[in-house]
Image 1 (cartoon, rainbow, N blue to C red):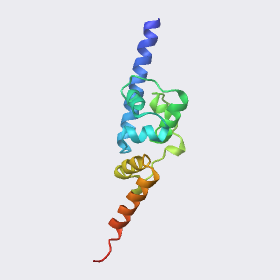
Image 2: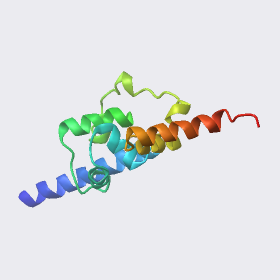
Image 3: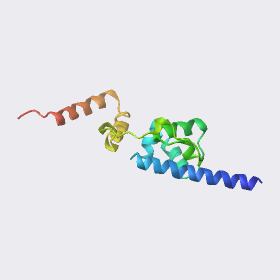
Length: 130
């Protein structure tokens, strides 16, 4: 009986990882984007997607919210109506993958580095007429 339980858990974890990966790709997010949004290491999220790790219930809930996917679908449950917060909204320009990567990088800079980047960005937006 224990072997069947392990096999069932492995199948469920694999299915869960596939669904999360599909939702992430549909949302045009990287693994790092999702991991940052839910507060976990990118490597941990990668293990979940590959079906090598089952997330805790709180982590699964945060993943469902971040990816706008119904937990019932992630857990392969049928006969449930999707929650209203799952309705898709158009991504805003602020949510482009390039901007998310840039913001993740900027969060790692100190004040002096941020000031230098801000100066460069302002000069790109409004170069002085010369």
